Image (cartoon, rainbow over the protein chains, first blue to last red):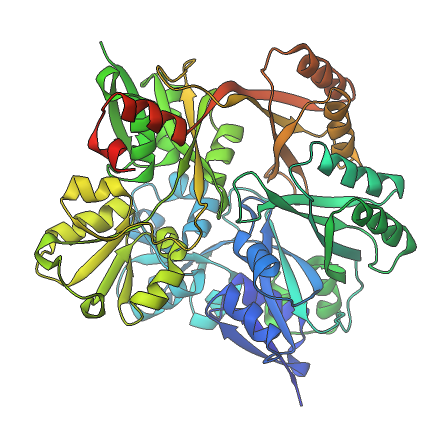
Length: 303
Length: 303
């Protein structure tokens, strides 16, 4: 029986692409869910073995909905991570594949995708009207359904495949180094073929009070053990303005003696520590190389 | 001549309420703007003396659009702060003021306001359909315009005044201690009547590289000077995933010798430091008391 993977849908989005890269199709069944809370809750209730959601984008920053659900609503461990390149493509109905850009009347996409391509749109489609839709996949679907209109969509490569559109221009995003970190939640996990980059442990640390210098003391405990922190992010406790939980990512395994020592230190003066997961991290580049060697799907070959 | 204040519109929102509390009407003219970037850019170009935008909510966390514009796009100083209570009210057209809640067919509001009242809606209006609109003021306006429909809006007290609606239920938000921090940007500023809570200096610190423990060293510099930090927040540099600017709020004046010493220390090992502003902080409670003493507007008396 194949393991089931829930992901933030709909089909044809970057999360769908990331899910395919993380879980090779021959061993897994994918199910799109309507929202990030839906994915996390369903995996928490054991309705799926794994879930895939975005947690951070290089331009936009944290996906706070993911962080807040992991902190406040579910107890499901993070079991893997993928750093995935975000490339936006301009797509048109095949009927219009030779249409000059100047004749395009409307651009459809998700607000975030449009924001990532502002420079391109200003230079190449200054007169087209922007219409915001719920997802990049939704934009592609609408273009397919409205074949007669001189409209374009912005979205991931997979959307063009899924909805049979023609790619007018590739990688039109303004920032060339845009990446999104996706996490796997649920059971223990490792990519069956690709080599991992490193291990990571994510921690949620709640300070005992508005203790001056408390965060400094937490960081001191990590520095003493020469534990590298790759990220620190504050989120409101939702109880009182100015009180925060800290999410800290460490580049070390969860059962490492140095981490144990640092956390014992931190807990000894009243901090509450919760381990959100200890897991392997992957970069899409490494997965792609493995899959291309195997002569796998078109999506991989194109990248 | 009255000074001009730009604020995040439309009229009848929490930002409008906060603007009225910060700038007494007799001395200032208010102008609503369409977006946070619009307010900050207009003040940066000296088209207005002051601007008011939200920067953090106790439940939702940072308003990242405000942070990112202050970091990347404008050089306008923060010159004041107001902590303002967020109370959501249920409002109906006066024609329907005696309608039982069970007969309400639709609830209109901004997604964030709806999210803040989930518990109330589940308990009192389980069968009403939710319709999302652009702002709480927009919801109130639509209720006024569609007098014949058994619909309600969720929004601030001011929206009910502005659109002549009847308040069905007050303070229906799930979290009783919900506050939003609003900032004033532009010229040097102090409330003409109310006492300030304390001074604050906001700093943007960019680490020289992914130097392990760099943030720890920054915090150490502050701890040595016993400077209290009220907040620390990371935002992506937008250049490379995993690289961040840190926004640090200190409870000290910008020209204090201890702060000068700490910042010299931080800069000496390669950090870039930018002062985003040094300014007085107010709590709405204190402004309200002053205004009620003066027998000021109905909005104040009602609270």
